[in-house]
Length: 188
Picture 1 (cartoon, rainbow, N blue to C red):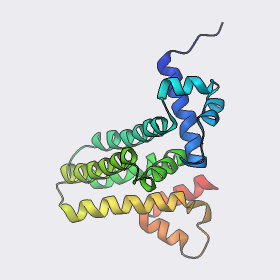
Picture 2 (picture 1 turned 90 degrees about the vertical axis):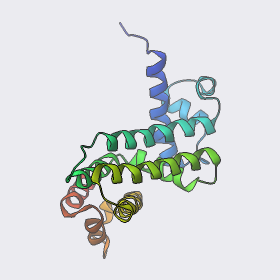
Picture 3 (picture 1 turned 180 degrees about the vertical axis):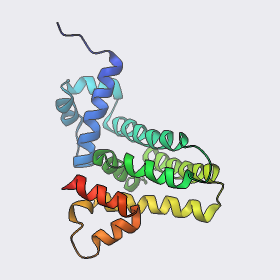
Picture 4 (picture 1 turned 120 degrees about the vertical axis):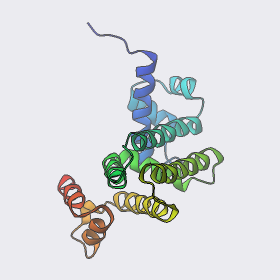
């Protein structure tokens, strides 16, 4: 006997399918019909739940940004907070679909909705770093800047191409030698 999904479960299923589709094809290259097929629902159902492709992408981006911020906010303040925040971020972005959607959101910053979400996420990460570590603006800026470098390296598939000249070294510099080794092993 099969059980029917609740509306919330169906919504999550669509958001998961949309995350994969937007990660693969970007905002402009993805249709609500592709998302519906991937989720196993009708395209009108997707539109009924989310309103438009724009609203669907906004929901996916907000979900990813919210997960990042929530994970940061769970880190304990203190002397180990900077390392813990970095570790949390690297683990979160190991999910390449989320990473790629986040990157699409950042590069779509000229859209008022997407840009606002991207800016709020960057500012909140900056604030959380200062709050949890007690460090100043320069250290917080370096944390956010390092996060963007990590995003770009993972989006560019650096772990899969770590044997190319300089790629492995840059990856290790960005995430640390142990984390780089783990990312490279996972990519193999």
